[in-house]
Length: 454
Image (cartoon, rainbow, N blue to C red; front, side, top):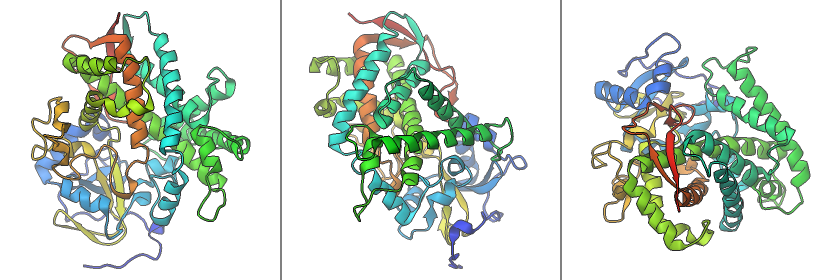
């Protein structure tokens, strides 16, 4: 097997010769992209049943491999041989909008970015964040206090956008003209990720997405000038004043790219996690009752940082909701050298797509995996420990999400107030179509019936 290493793997084109591996490219150029966007789990299951854990597939002009299975993921994400590049895996998708970020970087560059975030996600910072989160949640729940029905997605999307702006950027003036432009730029950049054609065509999603990113970068440059050398408890202030191992401030460009990506990554993923927590606890009312009982036992209007570990049942609902609906539907890498996966020779520069959701439903690891059963995460069962890569809602290896504890804190803080205020239920016999891109959620936004608790 050839082990020739390119002088610079980032300058190599994708390998497209995968004819020796079974699979189905689908339509010319588009391939399976549309079906993956609309019906991810069934598409992946179909490929697994027909071709096994490794198969060839085409997504939006890229030929690559669709890979499932815990052993394969362990090899890819632990990456002992440093052969699976996140930068190149995402280059033509996420990296086309958000290049050089904590998720789309490799090696020393990736380690340096994680170093930038080290203060922003430590305990002292998190204690400050939860106070901001509680205030925003309370303000938004006041707006639905007297409603008897809502479309939950609208409520949680707005709430978590305000949380992100407040916690990450220290912005609480939500009616300001600049804030409105920033929110719109974020919507445009998120929509840009859905563009199949990654060129700045006038009127196209991708062009609007790139324009949104350019606006965000200019906005964040101004924030750096305001925050550097100043005290503050928002993430942007922490990043502006973090220093590298030489005692120097991190470069403005690095901070800007990471902060823009943080707004996207943390906001959308936590929105998805909470909407599924509410979906399942609105259908399985015994779990709503269990969460309510532990919340009432604390006898507080808002969740305090020191009480996070006392939210045991809420944590079980959080974990099970992420098992059934992981917030990141597809992870990507590209091989640097020739490799082997599932018994197949994988040439250098081959894109590898990994949908974590499939591993989350594999019957060899999970009991009755299509049932909502949060108790599978109790210590006496610990099904998520059947294999170190059968459960990976936050990725794995060196790129495991640096904000996973922050996401859990936001989810618990929101549910603490929401469950305490409202008795909520899904519609009768509710079984919605699910969206998978750009964030997993019920397609109709999750209609809920509400009754204010006494």
